[in-house]
Image (tube, rainbow, N blue to C red; front, side, top):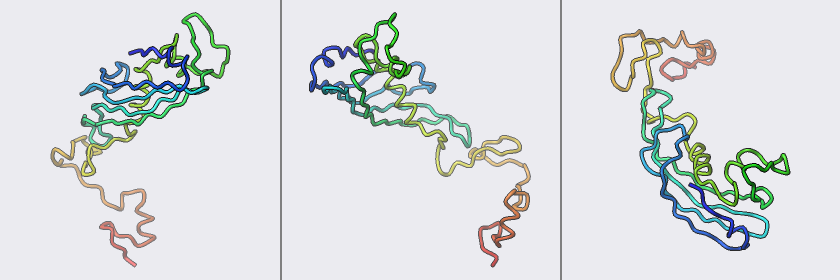
Amino acid sequence: MRLDISELLRVPTEAIHYHVDQPCPADLGYEARSAVSGELQLQSTSNLLVIRGHICADLVVECVRCLEPTVYSARADIEEEFRHSDYRVVSEGDQPESQELDDNLLAIFREGELDLDELIRQHLLLAVPPYFVCSEECHGLCPHCGQNLNMGTCNCPQEEATQSPFAALAHRYGVMPNGNHGL
């Protein structure tokens, strides 16, 4: 969704309150279980466009231990500041005068409009933990047969502490396999 901010850019100190209720961006990389909802406030000052607010959406994220898809409620607080020179009106055929403008800014601002999908996409991606675990009690997968240990056990032999690459350190410092100190 594109939001026309050309009037806001012309009148400094003006603010726009925007209620977000839209589908998740298609290129998010996660399956969405809910629409994106939240509140944004856009305010123009003499040299800055300030965007503050929050958004949330339910996304299907894969657990890094057991690989099971799990619904994660992603919540992102947004606080962005853009210099007026960063988002001046750029037409499709125009090239930016400054090479300092990166592709992210050009993706967000175009012809006096703010691309909310791109802003939302960037913040939701940052809201998902890079190593998502479905629960602290997740046992993960068996490293030998791939059995999901949350669903049941397998018949693979359990590794002993002596097979661990840290067994020599455990022996050196007197730590027993059960966690007790042997000193």
